[in-house]
Length: 454
Ligand code: PFF
Image (cartoon, rainbow, N blue to C red; front, side):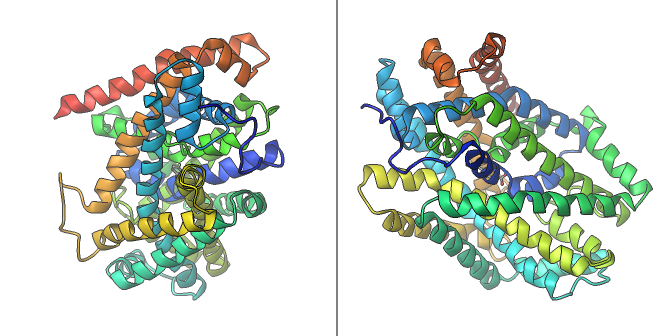
């Protein structure tokens, strides 16, 4: 299998277009919804520290590996891996790694869309003013009324899936580039404002910061370490070929190292700001840090209900969150679409209908996990919990491990050196050491430790 000089889907118009799109893929529910609640469940500071270490030692090197594989292969992940393996004289079995990525994206989007649907419902709730002067108990009961109504969750999940697939059907590049350009600065501004509000809680702000940034390792379990590592993959959209697909549209001259670092920093900042906005409110209102997936929906409305202009800014916040989720959702399904179009010879539109419908249908499991199906558990997890665990804690790190092995051991040094084209030789050597030894060892050690727990 040979590789084309350019992707048949076209190219980003510039380096910026790629940075924006990849940041759009990275920044999403993972930063604002998931990071705070898993940090709360896993005891705070020590978890955050492990997460930051994973971003630096695993996330950035793997992101560089994914982009370089995508750009060199210039096709969907399945075909890029296949043709690069053939070029290096290696087994075509590597294409299955691309396959597992397509599957992970599909599984993740099925529940991602249901949560994005909840954020959509909150756009309307917040703008309507129901949160004005709301108490902690009031916010809690408004959230529980939403999730206990399967029809409503299903309706919002459906709306979100339709929006996502319509954009994907039109091609990823045009619209996305424009919306992310406005979205990211606006989201940043509102988060800063929320942190400002949190700062006005005085001692609780200090308590929130201490919770986030003062490590107490006695509160971190082995499972917590796995969750932190899995989240580093999830939040940067790694381990499943999403960034690889985006890399396949990247112009040849762009520095892969610089864009990877820029995207990772932006993504991490958004998550930390979200944590700084939320935990002071948790303490000020005597809520539980380990409240779970409802955490942002139960805390932030309290801030919006009491700050000046809260109804407007709150509505805007959830609207931006929906947009952020939407630009991530697009990247979750893009590997599947690129594969269907390139290998199955279906039109882009038809590919979207097939993949969109399948994802929507699987999403029903998550819809029901919040209400009538709450008691359908396996290994003590609901269907939603299971999908999340399987993808974020197992499939993405495993995908990342194989990507690291592919870039570090299967591809020749000359190939990766040419593609990365890093000016300072020392930095290339650091990357190569990380991707060959540190990243795989870290992932394997965490996995072994977890298996040892059982
Ligand atoms: N990074 C996204 C988030 O943090 O919300 C989620 C995601 C998108 C994961 C794309 C994986 C992916 F390929």
